[in-house]
Length: 420
Image 1 (cartoon, rainbow, N blue to C red):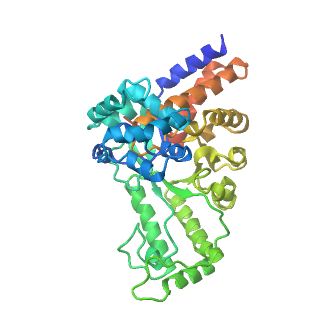
Image 2: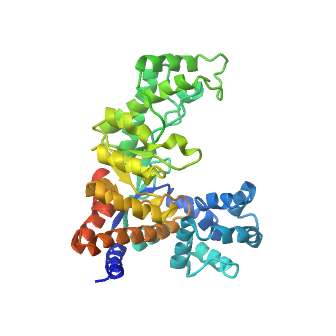
Image 3: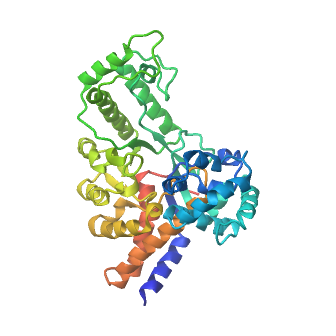
């Protein structure tokens, strides 16, 4: 049997496989329904970065999703930049979504109004069910929308772990417990613990951390720094003034982070970690996590984005630490080539229970979850087909691995109750 035929068979299997979507920012459906959607909803989120790199001014990017500006005026501004970015993976997800849901083989000057009309018709109660359950066969979505009130059992909250620590206001009135009477570091940690307990009770399955350089937690120094922040002169306490000492500011962050990880572990919550590309991504090197991994062997760490561009380093975290899982969320839309190569190497390096295959990583354009999933299926079927074609595994083994990556591994890691 040819390689193409094997890949086609595996892809067909994946098209009917129920899956877990391992990372989104999808808000409750009511938030999506409250928005005036149009064709440019498909170009919100990541494609805006491509437009900026192509030279589109930030003000014009912002105006693209402003429904008060006539659609045709926005299209005239957008059209020349669209021709520059249409071949990126970010854009491909939009094109796949437009074809699937709005019967558009392309997005161009002759059909953007028709696409908009069809989007507005479909933007009604049940759109999440149509896109996520019926079309994508998703059984659960791990979503970080900043709230446990997701309105649907389909959406499983992953809540923030990191909050500002640099001002008196942020410590005495933290966003997750603004009414607490906090005077000491222990008061603050008590509020943190109650926050973790509360969100777990409300259905959260994980806490999300941002990868940064982490030092060794020191309680004594953390107490000293906490006191310095809240004693900054001024009445009432300043809201914006920060303590300027860079190394000392990390002392409090490191200690609080360690305690939050301990609380999460106690409550059987996964610690999800953003790593890799975003903004000045030099601070997001996944190797910064090694001290945390070493000090917290009982904590389950879900490493997002396979650490891109530090892919091989991230794979080695999975090779070297039993408490690490590698999440391929977002990877298929940054580069399909990279994702395939990373999956190939992951098969060589890692136990098959350590990979999570897919997460769309979208907010408003729920339709693009489907587009991203198509790309993920292409990648995984191609990688597994090569293994079958070369004789390194049977096709039945490839299908078992695909099911692990898409469904069984995330279900097990996040302790999801998927009973219908």
